[in-house]
Image 1 (cartoon, helix red, strand yellow):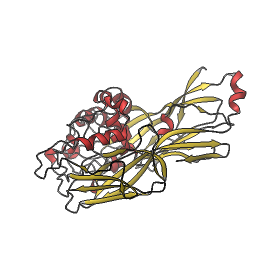
Image 2 (cartoon, helix red, strand yellow):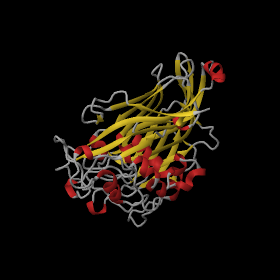
Image 3 (spheres, helix red, strand yellow):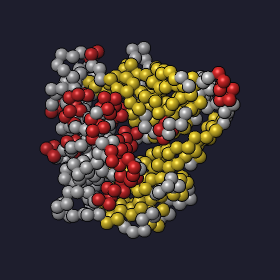
Image 4 (cartoon, one colour):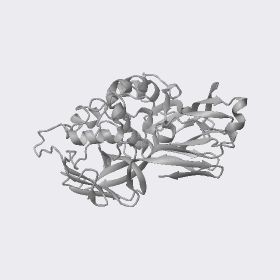
Length: 445
């Protein structure tokens, strides 16, 4: 079938075409309307321009590549444009029911991008399309900073980002005919400025009003035209189902040497669970990188080493019927993260057959940094920055583990001996079936 590429403008942009969280536009939506065509969901990309400013003046002052110290403001280098996408929602356009909803989207992608892309991937095509560069200084000078003398209207850094989620990632075509599945709506909840921008030196005296701005936003995708001889057949596809792996996002915090996390997931086919950590004091502040996936830490910035991990179902050890005792060393002589913990984390995020494109290394997954010392900053770790997490794979052949009647849990024994709350972002990957008909959609998990 012949294909055509379409460009769709955002539904709710102001007359200026410039969108920012600061100006009162926290949600950007795009609608692919019903039409006589077949959508290739993998071809969907969000394109536009990104600009970052240091203040809220009229006009605002652009960030310069020569800025340093208190004048510098930047983003997480591994995330690029995904820093500004706080939540991703896919809706069935006719019924407005949700097909997939991923919260804390940047932190999900921190783990996913680091474990599914090589350093060369992040430096090359992902840098060109998603504004990613796995080096903080190079990222600042090529993505955030501008040459001296540039005006606010001249600050332009173009991107064309794909949306990584289960519903779009299957590649299964979507029949856009009104009598069939119909159109889809994509909502992107933007991140607050202080949730994605930060000063590397922890100084907010100059850049407290720093903000980002998006412009010329559009959605591009590929649609195959339906030949006349197939129109009648495809118009009769009034119901059906789509199977894909979806992400359930959970949030909690820990603040003790023996943390017990338990949730009633209500999910039957859980493929894996993984989580990453961040000091709660680093969230929504211009002085810290709230999207960094660091090791749990104490109040002074010293890392709180993990000693023992137990994965649980209904209070019993599952799927490992043993404790995972780490290579904890109270004298901090072992900088390398426990290899079994790392292997389980990698397996929980990506399948084994693509782990050759992983960018995790001893440079970004170690215990040789401090979150409270400026000259030993966690933001300066090589290969994209800190990439720590915990994870467990529950499925070998996509059958999944049943957590519909028993609680999922994990027990974490650590060296977190003082008052330092650590935010825990948990992502549950499970098999889902989206059943659709003329009345709407229903998600079965």
